[in-house]
Image (tube, rainbow, N blue to C red; front, side, top):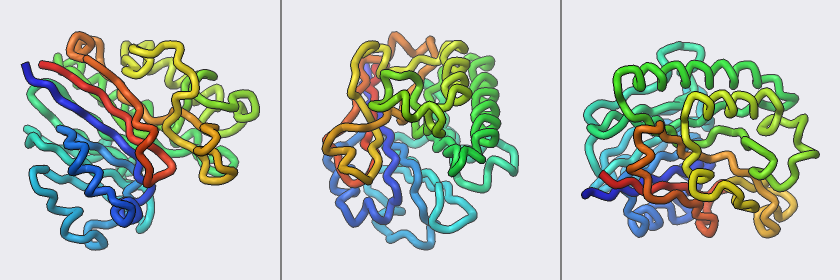
Length: 258
C-alpha cells in the first residue's frame, strides 16, 4: 500500500508567503503534492528557490495581469502529463487551473474566480465553474478518478461560515453560488472534509484580515478537496491545518491509500 498526502493552500501571494517561511513549512510538511492558489507572480519575478525545489516537480500558471491570481503545483511524483486551463481563452488568462495526470487519478488545482465587488463577476464565476465541471466529467467518462482541490470562493452551507445571514447577499454565499456547489455534489463529487465531519462547525479556511477575524475564528470554509466516488475507498482522512499562518487562508488536505 502507498499512502499519499495531498495539500492545498491559497497563499495570498507566493512571494509574501516566501518571506513568511513558506519553504521551511513545505520542507517540514513533506506532502506528496501541494497545490497553491493566488500566487500573484510571474515566473521571472520569483527567486530560484521557488522555481527549483529539491525533491519536487514544480509547475506555475500565471495570470497575464501582474500581481494577480495564478496557481502553482509542487509534486514529489512526476505526473504523466500536465495541462493548464480549461481550453477557452476567456477563462485561461488568469492562471487559475493546473491539471496533473497521475496513474491513479487526474488532479485539478483550481482557483475559482471571486464574484467581485458588487457581485459583478458572479456570472463569469459560474460560467467558469460550469466549464470546469464539464472538463472533470469528461475525464470521468474516460474511467478516470478525479480530485479537485483549491479555493472555490464559496461557502457551501450555513455551517461553513460564521455569519451566514448577513452574508446572504455577498459573493461567496449567494444563493446561486451555493446552488452551483449543490449541483456539483449532486454529480457525485464528495466534499472530503464533510465526508468525515458532516456536522463540525467553526471549521474554517479563510478569515477576513480586518477586525481580528482569525483571532475570533469568524471565518469561512471556502477551500476544498473534492473526489469522485470511485476514490472514496482510498480516502483515509481529511483535515484543515488552521494553525498554519502566513496567509489569510490556511492549508487543507487529504490522505489517500492505494
